[in-house]
Image 1 (tube, helix red, strand yellow):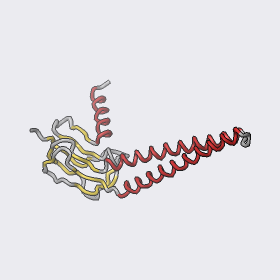
Image 2 (image 1 turned 90 degrees about the vertical axis):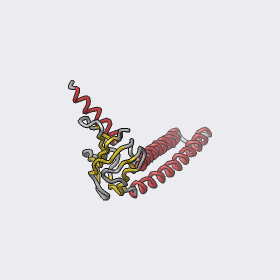
Image 3 (image 1 turned 45 degrees about the vertical axis):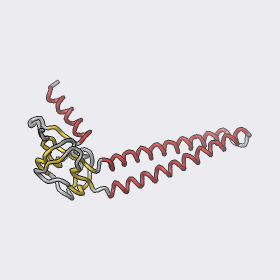
Image 4 (image 1 turned 60 degrees about the vertical axis):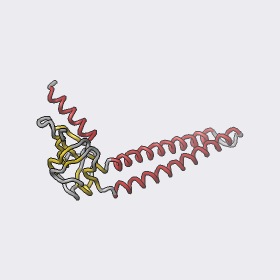
Length: 177
């Protein structure tokens, strides 16, 4: 296989996991892209030519929708947890009735199935909460290293979408000590 193909694959993995792409033609340039999140840029905290330190806030996405989704996901986890708890109690009651021959095999199995369904719903709700929390955590983008803002390619109110192709938001020039 061609070495450039492998370099391209590694570049894609880097950009889709971190949102930072390394420029092979200019070793000191890095692109900050929309690969991490999609949404509307709420605020850009830097200007072209500005020097930034590692960890400094570069820009942030509008997080109103993310916060709403987070509240919904948290509520869904609470509700699914209650359902799972009730389903577990129902299984325990069903076992007790079954042992006293007051409940059929079918009804006991039905209560067990409902409990498994409730456990699956709880797992799904927790998974969704993790995804929404991840979106919240990455709604703010920080400088990965000391750098100078070489180019701004976006502005406050700009919509970026990570579903179709990556969009460069700004270009960092790594600062040499």
